[in-house]
Image (cartoon, rainbow over all chains, first blue to last red; front, side, top):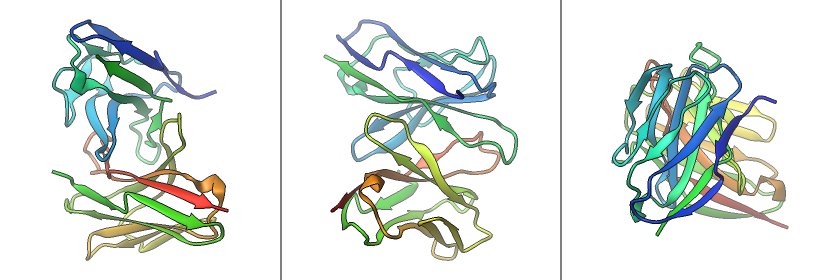
Length: 114
Length: 113
């Protein structure tokens, strides 16, 4: 089954404790992206990657890092989480071919930072 | 700065009624307008999409109406069903903008029996 898999799905952590949310896709997609979803704000892009070793900032990159060492994986790293990073996070991927670039989302990772 | 404004924030419709969600955009470089549907505990999934060279697109009970001059587009759900209860997001994308979607703030739809 074609899918985007995120882990963990739920996480409670404390301020300053580094964490990584993993994202993996099995569709050989070039493009991958991280969004956060907050009530009243919709989905906002954190970082994206057009291909291996190519990453760029989205609209709300502060406090986050990403890496793209392999085509299928795009982990989101919070080096020193703060309470304002409590949110629902989504990883998404798509092909970059014209006409085939529908964004497919993972099921989400709910993060609480105390 | 909200580039895609969505309303209403929430909507309650009776079974069989018409649900209407509206979006307005500012960036005239947007040239692809999808709607995503999100059920609780799930990620958003593409529902229907339109390009600005047409004024309407229909897929089953779902229709997008697009008004390029007003920079507005809307989702109409005909014969709304309880199974349509979900959060709906409009979005917009600039071709060549790295596949980035700019989302609206979402509308929580509840269809009551």
